[in-house]
Every structure is written in C-alpha cells, then in structure tokens.
Length: 362
Image (cartoon, rainbow, N blue to C red; front, side):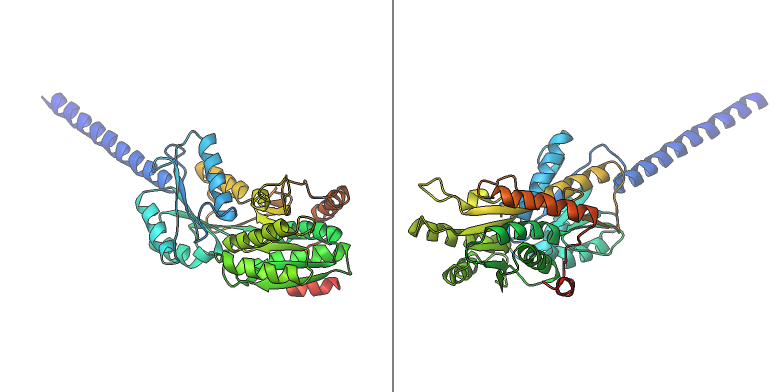
C-alpha cells in the first residue's frame, strides 16, 4: 500500500515537471519571437512618407528592398509576409505604424526622416515591437537607424556635372532644407568644383518634397538663367524638374539641358516623347533597397541592431551612380572611378556640411 502511494506521488511530481517545462518552453518561444529570434513566420512592413510608394525615389527603393527580401525568403505580400502602408499626410504616420504593430509585424520601417517623431512615439508605446527608421536617427532601444553617406554619391554626380556642363552653370534643387538634404547639396558642390573650379552652382530649396509645380517653376527659372544641368534631391518635387526639362527639350531639340536624378535610377522620367532623346544625365543612387534588405535579413536571423545606427556608403554599396550612363562621357566615367577609389581609401573625405566644405577652400 505504501509503495502504491509512493509511486503515485512520484508520477504526479514528474507530470507537474513536464507541464512546467512545457510552459517554460512556451514562454521562451514567445520571448524569442518578440525579439525577432524566431526565424519562422517572420514578417516585415513599412510606412511611406507622403511621397508614396511609387515616388521614383527612396520610398519606391525601400519597397523594392522589401520585395526582394520577400522573394528570397519565400514570403508573399500581405499580413503573413511583407507589406506597406502609404501615408497621405503627416497625420497618417503614427496611425499607420500602430496599424502594423496590431497586425503583429516583426519589423516595421518608417521611410524617411519625416517619420522620426512618430516612430519615436510609437516605439515608446510599443516596447516589444521592433522598428527601423530610414534617413535619420531615433535613439530608442527598439529602433534601428539607417543612414547614408549621401554626400559621397552626390560628389560623384557633381564630378560628372562639373566635367560636362557647357555653360559652367549648374543648379541644385532641394526639397526641405535640412541637415540631411544639406549633405546632397554640399557633396554635389564639392564634386563640381573639384573638377571645374570655374563653374558656378546655384542652390534653391522648394520647401516641400511633394510639390511638382514648384520643382517645375524653379527649374524653369534656372534653365532660363543659362544653367544646363540640375541635380535635384526633392522627392516628388523633383518630378517637376524633369517635366520642365522635357518640355524645354521638346521646344528646342538642339538644346543640351539635363537633370540628375536621385535615390533611384530616374532615367525613364527623362524620356522625351516621340524621340530617342533623354534629358537624364545620370542619377545618384541611394540604395535604400540594399539597406532595407540587409537589415531585414539581420532581424530575421535574430540580430536586430536595436538602438544602433547603421551607415551605408560607397564601401557598402549604399551610394553610387546609376547603371544608365548613355549621356555620360568616357572622361566622366573615368573620373568617377578615380574619385571613388580616393574616397574608399580615405585619401579624400567628402564634406557633408557647410563647415566641412569651407575647409576644402574650393
């Protein structure tokens, strides 16, 4: 009788241990999943700024990166794979981020520095969710910040503009004047003047990233003043720059005017209808797609760099010039290669601020 009671007691202890072990494993699994360490059922999504996912710029590039990540990992568009929400106004940022949190995406991107405040607020409210911000830094433990050395890529297209301008007058049109867009402006000016000290660079800011009409009118004024090459870093506003250049080329097919695109290869925006002409000189690639895909892979493998800043430059294939080089001369391409090596080796450091630019004495 005593042996039966002892055996029953041992059975109950073993059963309880099994149940507790199962509960412990479940808790550990939940923790791993919330930290992005569970490789199964990994989902990722992004929130665009007001430029939209088809902006021919960094929103579109980011979406390309997510699509490539999804394809490589056998994921489909939707709640069980990868997705995006488009913002029509600033008021949509926090709302869209919270929607993706509720849909349980393991990693959520805010595309563009305009989302920084909203990403910071939602990250505080949702400490168990992982976020990433593109183009700025949000100092939170559950936010990875992606930045680029835009000045390096802008320098290279500046070299091309400096060598190929026929009037020694080139222009830069920015969206909203800020520390970020200053890197484009300053790097471009340094590139132009490093190879052509006689050139003049006119700078204008539109005050908006989604005003094509302002981009068009600003470009019209520049071209009328004798500027023959314009580099824009203005998102949707930059589409107006292309529109103006195309229209002027249609009016005077012999006139040599060009636009330098930004973020992605914008060659198709420069096609002149009814002709084989294209007014896109080249484009400065900011490989948001490379960065988004890279960070997504890290998060999926359990190495989400929360609280860290990841910077992508020429060495990381984060910036450069586009593959479309039909209008770029051999001399310019050779110069780009030479300057690229100088930048990679550290022989030349591209300025990203006005103070750094002034030190070059250009």
